[in-house]
Image: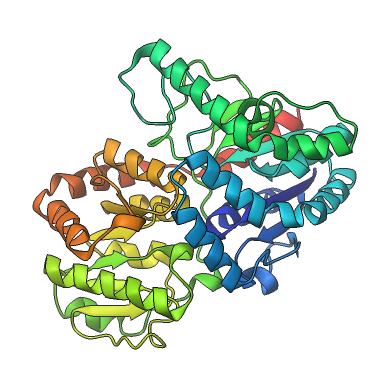
Length: 424
């Protein structure tokens, strides 16, 4: 098949699509992937080892200074729906026209379209061309069910779950539904009534790209929804290499705690320095050694020693197994890597979606209660590190879940499902 794919976002939104594109290409399909990176030009020179045609569209959407302003604004918003709306308004809408033009070309040139669940321009373009569309969901908070709910309160009964889903839909539609409907009106297409079930999900196929360890298939989900598992890929060049000083650092003492806020680490020196002070102080108060990831730690005046090793970037799937626990922002990709490595997590959430992953890790018994970045102190973070260290059950449970996850292959499962649906 000729398959057109499109995604938008930061590294955690792009990496799974690179993985799936490569898997489909290896399986014999002709794949084109369009990428719109929100916050960096990291993917300007990305290439495919297997011949996937990769093209950047309007990337980066904003420069680093503007990304910092958006992040600071989002921190101040307590309503999770308004958080999403702000990100879409500032980081998606400005390049919607360019992404839609690209989506129209993809829809004309390909047999099947696959998009990030936020990628309504591709969904609309596929509908206009009457081509099958596959939605890829990267968090298990999108598919309504009587057996679960997006807040993680799973002892409420069917009516309780239905009420929470209804309230969630009302809130989402109130602040976000106008985005796709604005484009539909411009094209003379009828508006949709519900963002979650008519835009984020696809009646042809929705891939829940989350491990079954987090997201077992619910009995009332439609047959169009399939849980394929995390879409993982070998280390990408922009993820760095193992630091040369790692072996010496590991041999010098106990297994360290790895600390990373990923793309949510401040880029400006003032805020990045403040964050580095918080993390190093937390490690000192907790009495633990640490590896701290920060893109400009040297420029911020920090130096590695026997207790703290600073790295600009590192491949998580290679470095996490050497650590005792992972402090992270709760991104879907970092959550996956920490869990695959069999390590307990401490989530410091910057967004509502990251709070979801914090709740999930806590529910599974492989993470303490998440913290919010806006109110985090070094003393609080140190207390959470000590809590994980003093309760070895977290590490034991993490190892068991990692063993199960290593038997999964999200890319292979996704390729199989796509072929079954559209090649029959």
